[in-house]
Image (cartoon, rainbow over all chains, first blue to last red; front, side, top):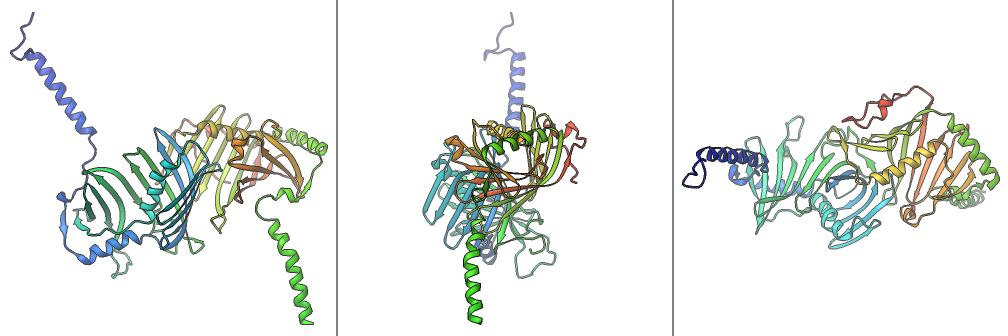
Length: 254
Length: 232
């Protein structure tokens, strides 16, 4: 019989344990979420004009009134539900009206918000109004009626990503902007495009939005939006078609 | 004289406008000539016989969505492939790409996001399967499922079959389906889905090709992306 070491393990067992721990650490490191782009890794930028301009850009990504069709894949508990959303927005009046249909037809739920008032009608017992209020209403308000940050700070990344950030207690809101190539652009306008939004709680990301612009539908407005809510545990992939002034945005207008 | 013309014009507008408005929106079929039950039965038998002769069918489709909160009609385009028995592919190509396939008892769904097709695990597989089975039945000329629908027929002047769901659960979503048969009574010209309220969706089928060779692979839902189809 092999005598145990002072700590109760043979040298061979110790070595195996060390290897196992090392492997576990490597695995855990691999599984760890991608480190969040934090202010500490970035250079703070003192540019009040740019801060103001970007803060305004958050609120004015869309015109005051418009309509949109959303083709949405909602992934919840490993299953994906495809919906079509028909949306009207009046940002000045803080009004949103959404009719969400199954992609094969049939209205699943309807949401109407005006300021603080929200009316939700769900035709299916699987989508409760309380869940819709916490998820869909909040998503729509974050996308289309975001309030400006009250005292934002601006940070610059090495790859020209700007981070407009604000901490309020345990909650941080961060907007990411990416510099666009300056082709035929108006020198008076900044060339930064909103590419993402992050909400953090206690420095942990709880909610994220990514914006993609393809230039086919519109260059100014995202044609694809991805949302991930890590608290309610759902993901949304949204293809968007916009209607401004009763006309679909054409490839050439923007 | 001018006053008289104006008065006539006004009268014409008063008479014509409600007629035009009355023929728009939902309830189209209700305003048309009903087909008596015995004639409808004969039409349904003939249609099923004619539809049965169609072994494969491919058609382009244009979907016109009329939704109360939009003044615009929202147009989507795509195609439909059908191969007897039990193979159906319904695919939208514009403005959003999406593909739904039935192959025997299996339902497959693909969505195109951010430049990539993705096969998805649909949460409402049973409902999708049920809907696709209905479409497959219609493509086969089987309209008369009296356990599910009240059936009636109208001349507009073509033959229109109106299916009204019986189930209260179904009625929460769909008021009725209107199926427009083609002149040859061997295919559909259009489907109108009347939803609750004034919303309705019209799907027009055009550029039909019947009984052409159709590869089984077009309905293969085990691929990572839908097998490509060249539009005709």
